[in-house]
Length: 209
Image 1 (cartoon, rainbow, N blue to C red):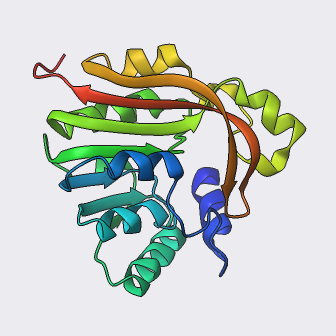
Image 2: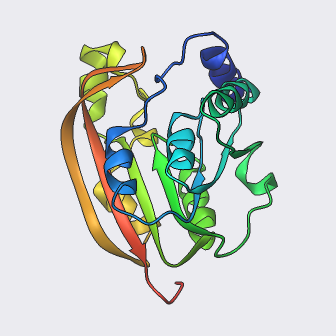
């Protein structure tokens, strides 16, 4: 599978592709919250999951890449924390309805043909009043990455995000924050330079739609 090979190849080196420090937007959001249960989809090499575990969160994570899992577990051990990290596609994993207080989607760019499906599945795993925290490249980012490939991100517009897509995929959320923003990235050797992102924090309403 081309998708799987790409990520195993990216993570199959000693260097951490996105660095070992957490994403800044995630860090800012988690530091406001009391620790609970959190899920990191497409977590790669574990920088964000390990950060959350150090804050006292009970951390679950998954990715399709066994190489990503190896690096993440190594990083967790170095930091003396535990994370539950599964490898596989979402439908094959055993997460439960209302299991998590927070799901953090940090550059979780699933293939365009499944991303809305994945969002709908993930929605069922969030407890009432739980949060989605998302940062990912916006559709405008296609112009940034064409000028500077070092900033990273998908090069097909369908895999990128728009504010309307977020609203459609997560209709049963109170919007705490939702904006499209130009930011400067300095994350490992793969996210470097100016890019355009969507940032979203949403609180799940009591009634599932």
